[in-house]
Image 1 (cartoon, rainbow, N blue to C red):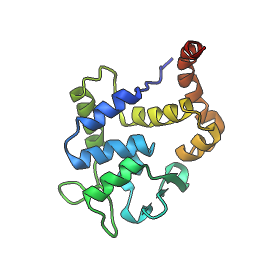
Image 2: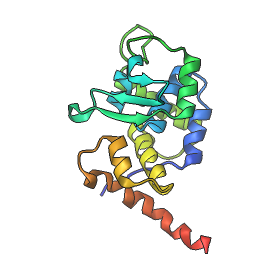
Image 3: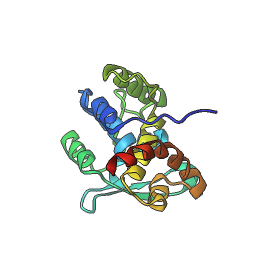
Length: 174
């Protein structure tokens, strides 16, 4: 059975911190700090981000469903630094079009290598890490389900199995 890969918070921070290219850093932060799917990162538009209310509207999500997620302060800060536009896609390729899925996969892979991460890191691993870290921090699984855009709670419960590995550490709290 395939074991779901999850990065530690420290590993995620290393990946983001070693990234100097602002656009690449944004890609990584959307995957982790917003828990977005690869397609959702590619299709995110400026008008989907509500800077006043600190939320994002994820449209064209899997299953044609829309959802609202929080705008993490670190992501908001980087978006502001990147330069807020009024409309169109947030991430635009050098040729002026949509980012390619393969490009994002390569950004994630190469940045993880540069950060010295030995695990196989993909865009979805960052999404898994987002959900697992929220769960480990005590977030209600139903909120995580909503943030991830899962139709079924059973899909979200996959993360409880991943997070359970840290239960052993709880003994150290006593």
